[in-house]
Image 1: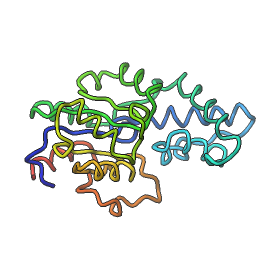
Image 2 (image 1 turned 135 degrees about the vertical axis):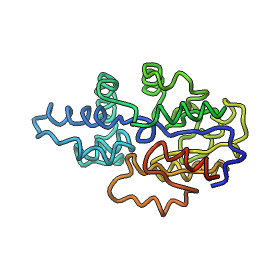
Image 3 (image 1 turned 60 degrees about the vertical axis):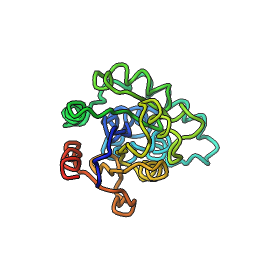
Length: 222
């Protein structure tokens, strides 16, 4: 992966920088137990955490966004998640060291997530990692969410760099599609919430990493 022109690294949020699955899963599971249904283990929710409400409600109740009851259950899920979203969410091992190393090299960094500002803003304000981020773009910051490239272009504009000077790292195929459409080099984070059926080799990313610090090795070898 050519890295000589890299000025900034952008990251997806959930499943790439932070492990929010415990709080996402617990919010959905509380909805189950509130209805007298048996509790599911976190391992059942984790592979679907990257899909947000769609994934969590799919596991908890076997419904899809097309289901008539989905909008009401989604808002109930949002409220339940909002109440606990910082209880057990943590930065993935190696992420802080990676960010420190990127900054030491003079690289800018930022976040582009499909999570709405309703959750992204309080979460990133509360976690020290994000104090040095030059751009945080949510799913509703622009009129489009990933896989549309506009959120990535917006992040590049906020950082003051061309989109083609950015690398985008994410754990979902939508991340790679958006990054490629934005003219960025792309890296698949296979340690995230890819799910048991995902095959990152089919995403056509420029590279993949199985731990955060592997990104430095890619930059070193470029």
